[in-house]
Length: 346
Image (cartoon, rainbow, N blue to C red; front, side):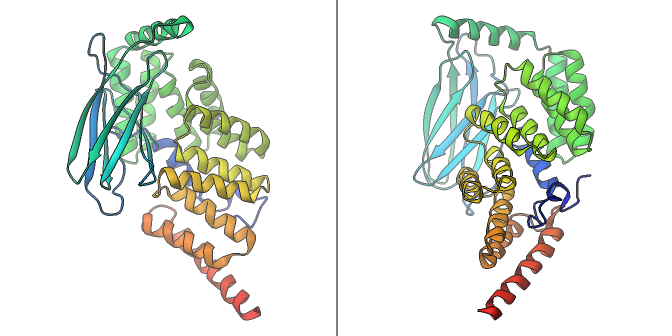
């Protein structure tokens, strides 16, 4: 397990509290929950759920990106449909939300829903694009979907279920079986790499992330984020930044992508940019703990210990008993001592 608090910041002792295990969990579990969900937000009970289908034959559109946003509430969510084309987001404050569905080879599908404490159910249809190269892409995507055998989908789903139960290693066998049944299953290949990263098999993880990128034609954002993080670990932040930004071009609503970018920018001593990136992550998901740790690092770098303590407190409110909570508490005590010393000097 990658639990050493300072492991990926050995060259920068100022970054003492960015736990690697937290980032690995972000790479493994965001946004690919079995039935993608958002944690409760501000104690509210609003819920938006729905099913995405292909218009031509009403087939479920599995592993399709669904983006939900409310500019007024400052909420952005990016989730994936499950194998039945279903998605669900819980804990939404009252308001009107825009829902966008994007899938290569299909027209963008848009809908809206008003939440007032009750549930909103949607059915969204994807229509093939009909022009130029996009038509060929639609045919390619459709052929790929049809080629994925049931056995591969079933094993992939089982792998996601193991991940949802915090058993990434248990999911590894299922993802490998999915790839055996369908060698071009780049989503499963990515998850194999993410588990290998967690198990410190970095060379294998690098190979599998690159394979996922190649198989997807460079359009699978999670593989870009995984590759960028590995480059970060290898002490190549310049290369990592480029790869992560390419991922964000594919999925600009990903809090994980912005948080990893923030870490990379800290390594490059671009503190202001790192802060902006972390805040972009929080805008998309206020409960994304890693982004608050990046902000804590930013404030520590500037000697803003009061703000550092506040961000660490936010993280501990979000994750009181997780694998890294005790280490974050230790970092908080160091920050409090630094704050007391600075106040005494003033």
